[in-house]
Image 1 (tube, rainbow, N blue to C red):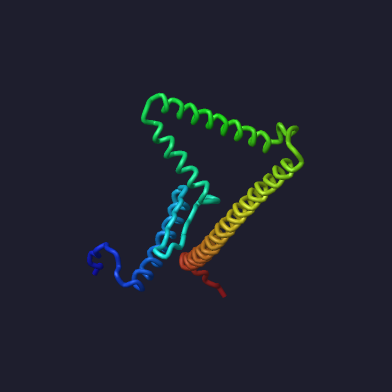
Image 2 (image 1 turned 60 degrees about the vertical axis):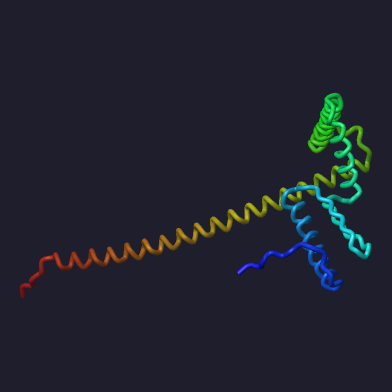
Length: 193
């Protein structure tokens, strides 16, 4: 049996209001975190209590970056009303994407050991650390895969061994049945004495 409909209005009792605020705030923060993790969404949540306390959650490194992104998109949205602004917006987007693509291609080449001449010692150290982390991840995954394959082969080996034992039992039973049949079908040897 479910709960009845609750009228949404201000709770008059201050203690009940504070308890409800605390529970609902925790639930809201939990949902914001789950949304950011499950859907790979950038989430920013700000809550001010009636006592002027601040509660916030940012799925990125800082709330400031979420707010800056929100402000930028709000400004761009306002400019999209006229076609000239929309063209400029898409030109900026294309330029930004080209720049991102260039950076990703350069990172890829550096990870492959190409175009390293312009890097500082710190950059080379960071690249080395990144490659070591990646290599460690690959080795861990390889060991895990090999371990799983070994377990699977052991299980198959055990199954084959069980089948082998069953077949040996069947062969033994058939051999005994054949020996019985041969005894019955053999003419009795009469000894002359």
